[in-house]
Length: 463
Image (cartoon, rainbow, N blue to C red; front, side, top):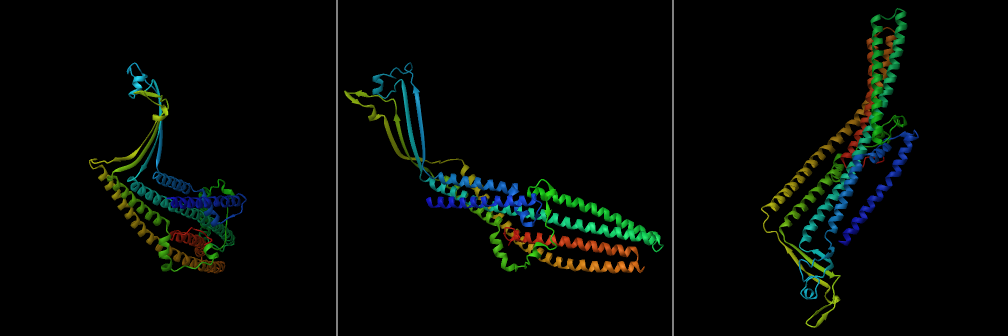
């Protein structure tokens, strides 16, 4: 027991030290935002992790489990209890109270005071208490995994909020560029219409395209503001004007020149590292000990009991011409074994056992279900990452093609070879290609974070 307690306290101390290492990082990230420095994906995840109320609640759940485990350990130690009294004994009811004759036969004085100390140590009950301790220990380990998982979830939420804001910012830039193109086309169209080189129908198409571009810009501005508000709430910043996003031309995945790992090599280690599966296994272990503890209720309760009592108002007693001093009989020591055995409870214990067996089976089913979903999650996130890499490569090529096509279409339009509809379509294709590229960059980073999450990673751009 001493060894277990030492390990437990050391482990708790290490976790406490790890928690204390994080606040300076949070303060540093908050200062970066407050000083209008660029907010990166990594800092956004760090700040969300420490601001998340779900993560804070899971930390409290861990503290609760640790306290319950500590209580379960201490319940195996001897219990020492004390009692004392000071009584006024009425002689009007019992006339021997307070008399010398009555004292010879054990009747109390008019005033009496006594105290006692009782030590109780469970013997057979240690088996039940041990199972309770093992159950609490397993639940503590599960709570530790749940705390880690809640922090991973918080980081993923922060990554989502940051990437969505980053994509919205890129789409806003694309919308602004698009309206500039539409405005120039409309201006050129008016000049050509006034020169008699453009029909009124084509001019109306340019006007319609310009109005559509204005609508898209308004929608892009609204989306950007909403994503900034969401990001600000996630990282704990109240003023969205303090947020300046990192607007690198490359995704984080591209900047790190990452390579897609082999699925077969990371599948089994990923399953082994998933915090939700580890927690589910600990819950199964806890339910097994709970069942064993319930079975132990059929055993008798056998305790070692020792009681030491003292009569503080004892007086000298003379009996048969022999005087007994107060100190010779005021103290009493009693010790022995105390047995209690519940023989008939009308099926209460059996019903409790049935309940714990069902709970144990439920925990096993939950583990199997989580394992199945985890296998799907790892495979799906891997394929999504693979797809995102390919989509980004294709999006880059599409942007180049769209730009070249628009320049050629613009030259042909100026020469009167194509209509306004063709030019507007080419401009819209260019806008769509740029928007798809912005979405592809964000989707790739998010797919990377999702893949890390699926294999039990800590979600970091530093990996």
